Image 1: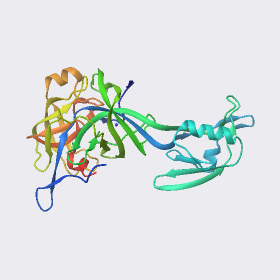
Image 2: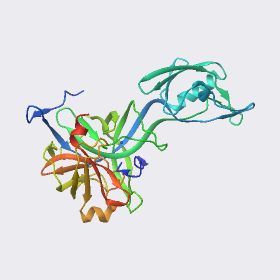
Image 3: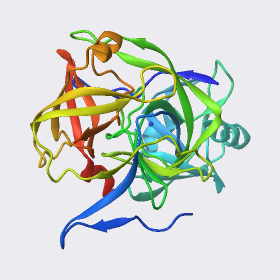
Image 4: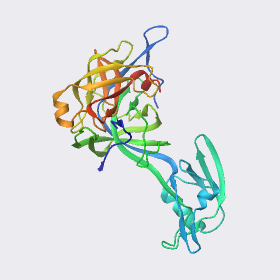
Length: 337
């Protein structure tokens, strides 16, 4: 088991990581209603960058002085090194192993930059302190964190979670080539207060495989639950925000252990056309939840919002000046991904 914190960003902080086609029940000629299991359970995400992702360039201190071969060649932050000297690279360790084997030889580097694949050729240099060969980059190969599963499609087992994109400690948005999703137990809470977002503290349950992650975008993390994942205790609902309106609603979230609980909220404002996925302004009204967490905290990202028995959205952000308030995303924006 591994203790982790939550995915983090922002001044409006994120409350943040072999089936058939989607089950679509026709509601009208233009609209479909999805039948889902409602989530609310915490999950631990380990997301792979698909290589060595560069989070910064730096200089290597050599006997001849400071140099940065990667920067000079044109490699920049955000690039992903996926092949070196014709050898596939999946981790930082593999990159370092190849560099130290090639030493100061001219070496081919294959790099992904967005949708492009670029080629560079240059030589590593020897760091005079460590005596290891480097190219002058700061890299990562994965990022881990906890979030909340919003829904699981009843027909195909595809899940949606989080409701927003993921960034690492360097504040850069993460791109993934896949990942693993584990059960998670919430073991502590840092309460939210005015001016500082709180957070859930969780423990990965590495013996409980929730599934695999295969997509990360502005609307969250998506993937498929394991075929042996137990769905029997989850409630069923229609994912339909067509008639959502300001007023009473509920959120399902887990702030202790592994089991979601139902808490009362108020949908204060509805803006379905918001391009930043801030489609709802919500306010926590449940005294128990406010007492435990102070309101919305990081790690609650993805907590499903229900109104009149329908899944209408998910919690995504907390207002730093009022932890009882935050934003939610419209479920249609999540589920159409």
